[in-house]
Length: 261
Image 1 (cartoon, rainbow, N blue to C red):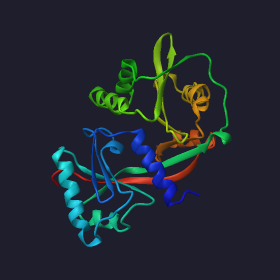
Image 2: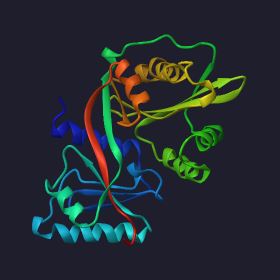
Image 3: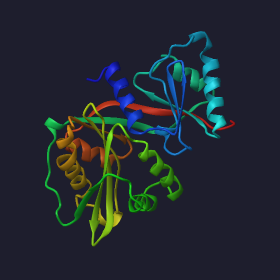
């Protein structure tokens, strides 16, 4: 069972693994700004609050002005533990609405990993940089366009203290799948940007990339735990990771106040 300190620790790892372009710190809150690409990199992480509870409305207003200065809506990440405890009620009364669905953070100890056979019908390449073909592939098949991919290219270059690797699945020298792993110095491997060409579904490409990266790179470099995030509406992904042995660590959602509402 994950307690408050465990959840806050994972939130800190997430901020280091997915570094924003700009930061602003307000009474323990961490405000992150990255040109509006991904809510993770453009939201408030309310891990602690050292301000005056009687002036919480003022801090919320100041936060909104900070995001407006970047021409962004204001988004708060709300995990199962946050500070202060009345923050969601305050936000809802100030016109915030839930953005998207609830997301589960799943975690698995390397010792409990249930290995599966890699599909050797395809070629797998582990690389240290986010090459152009990765951005092009994600821009084509993911919900983020090529312009957003350029911003994410810059974001991944800021990942310095955690180690990072990308794995590409290829068929006839064509990219048909990608996956990114970010390994924190504490041994937490964060899995992100898992995507497979729809024409190659049901070929175990995602699980093959997953196990190749973990066994060939992450474990030799000290990985102890694997963690990732899945929207609860993504039944296919939830079923896959549950099958592999992942368990819920905590959940979170976003509260958003749209720009100039």
